[in-house]
Image (cartoon, rainbow, N blue to C red):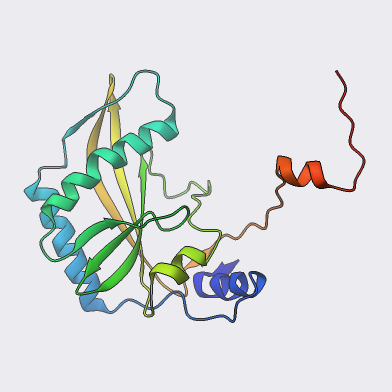
Length: 195
């Protein structure tokens, strides 16, 4: 097990970068201000209990994406102190919470089945490139989970869970190996095509 700070330090080394702090501790007043603004946006826009119509035969991942796409514009409209912006480019984070030029890394997830005993992975990040490009220390990380329930062909929005991730937050780290068609085609190992 790694802490989030240890992960980013090791990741940057593997990427060939001199490690810089990519996660900072949250000031209590900033947590309070974000909670208050998001709580007001949820209530002011009447997001809780609202209905998200779903495309027919949507997969669980597609439903989660549709719920996120439904909730985010409403939250954006309801925020008074912060702005919710897309973070351009592939990878983590999807969005930024911005105020007075300070950018907070924001990842949105959606679930219909919150279970505190569930150990299934929720992938956050695998590269430091986007963080290093768009953010400057202190970098704070916020995970926002939208809870919903399914009813017929709709998702009923329930609540938001906010996780203010800290440098000492415990994270799972998985080292993966992948290949591409390009790598396989250029490889020196034996391959065969059988038709």
